Length: 155
Length: 238
Image (cartoon, rainbow over all chains, first blue to last red; front, side, top):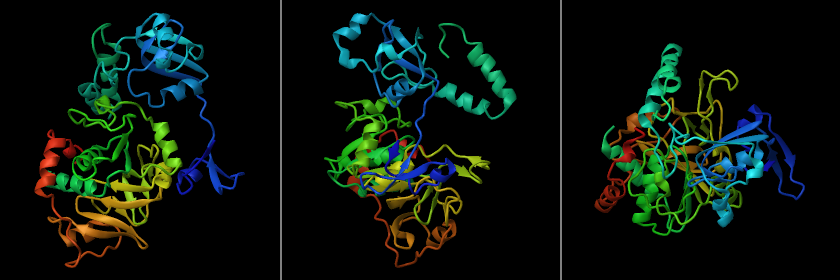
C-alpha cells in the first residue's frame, strides 16, 4: 500500500519498507506491506447471533481490523435480535458474514473502557503496572485478580 | 511541578493556534487538549478541533486525563475517525498536528521508538503511532514536552521515528522555533534562567539578555484557563 509521508523516518530502513516511483508522477512513495492477522478479537456494544456488530462509541481501527483479519471473534455487551440491525442498517459497523464467532461477554472490555457504559479501571491498571515490574509479583497478580476473579464480579 | 509552568505551557501552545484552522491531537496529549479548548475560548472560536476519539469540536463537561477517554465524545455531532484524519492530512488539509517525542533533536526530529540499537534497544519506547506520517503531511507540527533536559533535547536522535514540518516546540523553559540552523530559542519563559536553558539543552542555543521573554499568561488567559480546565488536567504530564 502506498503511503504519503514516512519517507524521512528511520522506520523505513528499520522495517525494510520499500520506496517506489509513483506511476502517476507524484515522485517517490513509501509502500508498506498489508497487515493480515490470522484473527481479530473485537469487543463491541451489540451483536446479533449472526455477527452483525454495532459499536456505540469510537471505532478506532476496529472495522479495519475486522475486514483485514482471516477470522473474526466478536465479544459483545449484549446479543440482540437481528431485527435491531435490519430496522436501521446504517448503524451496523461490520456485517455478520465477516464474523466467525460471537460471544456475549458483559463487561468484556474491562479493565479498559466501553464508551457510555463503563470507564477504564484506573485502580486495576495501576496495580497491573506495578505488578508487571517483576515476574513473581505478576504471577500473584494474575492469580488473584484475573484467574481468581469470580464470575459476575467486577475486576 | 508548579502550576505556573503548566499554565505557561498551555497558554504558549494556545497562542500558536489560529482561528479557522483544523487541528488534531492524539493519545496522551492533555496539554494540547487544554490548549485547543483554551484557544477556542479566546481567539480561535472557529478552530476545528479533531482528536483521536473521532469527535469533531467536542465540548466535554470535564476534561479527562486520558485523551482517548470517551468523555471526549461529548457534544460531537458526528465522527471523523483516525483514518479520515490521516486521509485529510494526505490531502494537505490538516493544518496543525500536535506531536511529542521522548527525545527531540536539533532538526526537530523525534524519537519514539528505541534508545540504543533498534533491534536490541536499551529501552524500547512506545512507538510513534502515526507520527512518522503526520510529521510529513500536516501543514505544520507543534511539539510539546514537559521535560527540558539534555537527555531529552539532543543534538541528533539515534533513531528518527519522525522528521518533518515542525514549527514550534514548547517546553517548561522556552519556546523553540525551527529555523534554518535547527531549533533556536524564540522566547524564554519569565521564570526560566538562561544558564539553565543552555545547560539543559543538548545542542548549542543562543539565549541571553536580548532573548525575548515569553509573555506570562494574561488575566483573560488565566480566567479562560480556569474555565476550560477547572480540574487542572494540564498538570497531569508533569
